[in-house]
Amino acid sequence: MSQLSSAGSSGLSLERSSQGGVSSRCWCGGEVTTYTSKTDENPYRRFFRCVGGVKEKNEKHMFRWVDDPLLEEIMMVERKQNQLLEDQKKMVTNNVELQKEMVKEVVEKVEKNMIEIMRQELMVAKESMQKSIKKRICVVIVVAVSMAWLYGKMI
Ligand SMILES: [Zn+2]
Image (cartoon, rainbow, N blue to C red; front, side, top):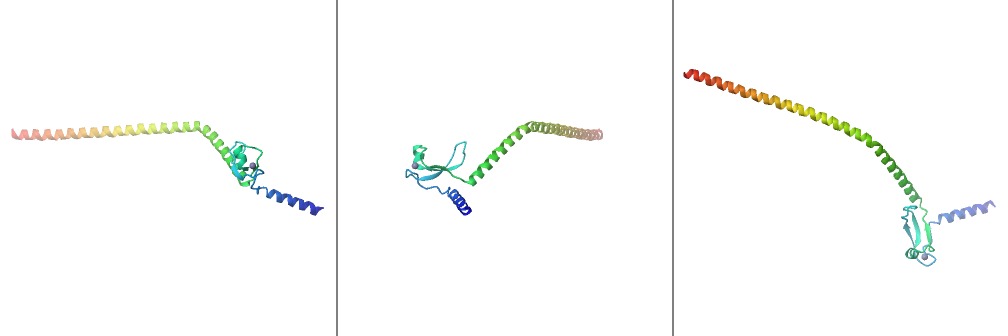
């Protein structure tokens, strides 16, 4: 009895593993090929379909989902990625206010720095102007004095 049941179960598992090996011909004699589903319910899921059935859009022809554990995994990963993307979006929207604050802070800092730099530049410009004026005054005085000295000598 136990031998029979084990044989039965092994036969069942054999049948299960041979599910992927779907007959290459439909009952109508049409070729059976794999397609990739593009529906929202089963995105990227592959299925066997009779070529004639696809052309005729007839549901009675050969149809069977491909039991592909890899595809299941890919879909899982995709779902996770979508979840991650959603989470990121949420985080971004939460961060917008924070980013605004940060940008404001940076802009304020830059403005302060700019004002400071402008002030320093102005100071330098003023100083150099004053220096050049002083220099000119010095030159004028020297010239005037030497001219006066020359005049004094001439007279
Ligand atoms: Zn068919």
